[in-house]
Image 1 (tube, rainbow, N blue to C red):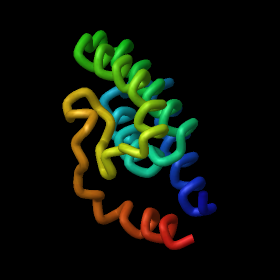
Image 2: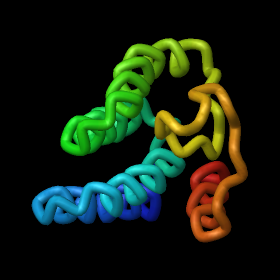
Image 3: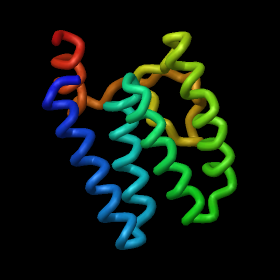
Length: 117
């Protein structure tokens, strides 16, 4: 993992934790979606992000998100073992766990640098 990617992931999760303390769950989830796009290729980061998504879903009493994150926590190891990770997917229950998505422009440079290293 490049230093740039690691710094971006740490920054996103620190922001999530601060927003969590402030009970700004929707905004925290947006940062988790960004972290998911950045970190899904790395197993432990991927699990950690889905765990946080589950926590936010639980705090919001969002049954769909809770179920979706439990499902994703179970699928994550399989996705890594098979190499079937939908690039660009934001990780929320509002999106199919199998659907690749366009990578936002603001994240493309970080991920291109990661692929080239």
